[in-house]
Length: 411
Image (tube, rainbow, N blue to C red; front, side, top):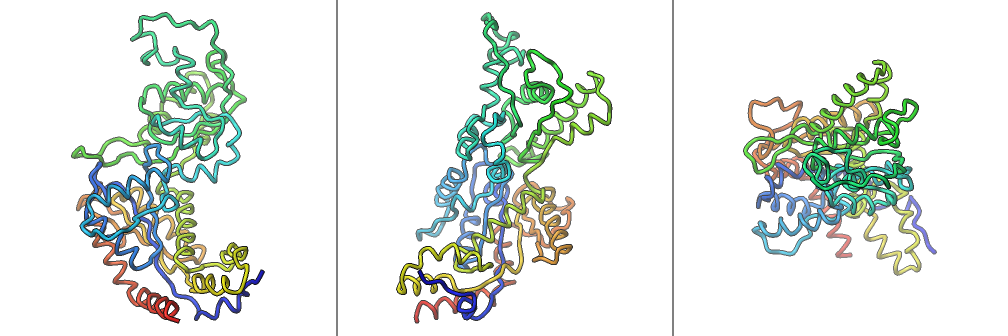
């Protein structure tokens, strides 16, 4: 097989620095369930300019990345004023709040884990390979008296529950919160029980055992179709922490030990750097797909396809525009998640001498004029205006890349 050497590879004229964009979804493309035509037009412009982009949400609702992408494509198509065929987004461009669980928590894939959220998250968890995942609702079905107010609990239920056969053998190694629990009381009560003990019905508290609980979304508030913001998963974490802490105090646990136990609460989602590093990796992969290669190693992934000379010419034509991502943009409506995340990444970039980040704020969601913008670079009326600003800022390099590609296609 023939391989292109780095020298041949660089003959394409050096690098063209392209911007890359991460977009929030709720409050940017849609308000509640309602998508906007401006959002469809904004994405068309980004696709046309061949700028790498991903969509990043602290939601996900328990869908898989592919399911969310399909749904978004359908809904954007429905409001799009342009009828030309286009795929707005693919599964590998969706960064849902729990997307990093797949790669970052792979050590838990063969362990029993308790998962929390909407009923459909079990499918997403199994899809990632968490083979021994059990949904909170299945766990409470097995142990119906844990929640006195549950559907099968005693307060609301006149049937007699047979507990003679009840077994407490789950022994979860972690709790993964994919989305907000449907029932906050059940979540607070049962997760506190599971954090305290591997077999809560038999032993109330096992001081020697500790397991992590991983949250995917720190947002205190989010915007739905209701006129004002609603509590999000961040509110659930707050409520759980304060109740769990009080519970530990009532068990006589020392303040030092309580603090250590609260460190078992692990946070993903915007504005966490862990979440944005995942987004940055996804943007670099998108840049590679548009025919830019930020790294030589990317090219070696394709060498298996270089079977003969004709193929080599084809592939060389596709992948020899060398470009770097020159600047990262986060476009969102929420200063505390979107803008704070961009600021966190920019501070990190400054300390490591890497490419800078800017947070662009839009007025179509949580943010209202007069609120603290937490360091947004610019504020726009909507997502289309923010995209126009990015395209205007980088118009020369976008034009240059278009010309490079045209010449290459012609030759």
